Length: 312
Image 1 (cartoon, helix red, strand yellow):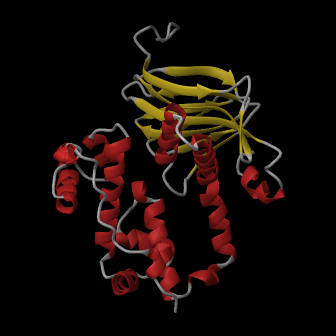
Image 2 (image 1 turned 120 degrees about the horizontal axis):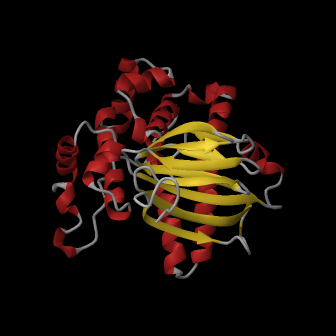
Image 3 (image 1 turned 60 degrees about the vertical axis):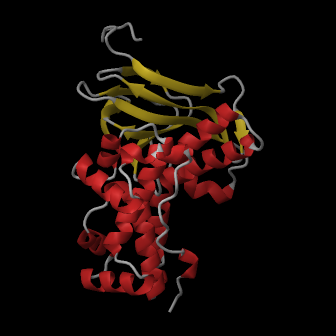
């Protein structure tokens, strides 16, 4: 519990951390110094400190403000914040909100050779609010699971998850550059459908309407809807609904989040609409899902196999 100008009434609901400041873990192209999760009471502040490593912060839920060299950066659920070394950093939960986030501190090592130059460049700014390509919650959670379970090949899995986090945090910027440089790769019908699927999966937490998706990807609404149904056998709206429930299943199982929190994260108007959609796909409400027959949760039905899609 904090004991400073903010008073002892502000503190942490929980704080899980593995740190390796004295002897960092050598994991592939990076050295790991810390990884963990912090859930803050409203108003709690991690005081200003000098950043000595690159740090990735993934906001699981709630809201707050990050400060880099005194510059405020508002944070919301789903945001990915990157801070670089040699700058002052602080983070604070909003006065009326609980802030929960994952964090990872690392440095690139000698294995990060010329192949990783463009990746490293994405981390060089004092701070960067990144749009992630893919959700970071699961690799963070699975990585922490491996640290605590320490089963066979845990070190290999930890390395894979940490490298995945570092790449996913900035790959959106890298892939955007590549897409602009090679627009011809999206001209075929098969590639167009794959591009839509990829966009939905990468932006599931902030998806707009199908019209918004079509506009963003440069297709007409009618063409996109017709093409998707023709190639996959289901409507794009149904695919999005199934993907959201598929993600909700994982969040219920691994995320220690309430149905209300998950509904908000996935963009449902209310927990009631989320529950209705969940029941439509899984046959039960989210509340009862994990208790079915006291057995392990079942997977949401798969909509399609990407490997079965063909190019024209």
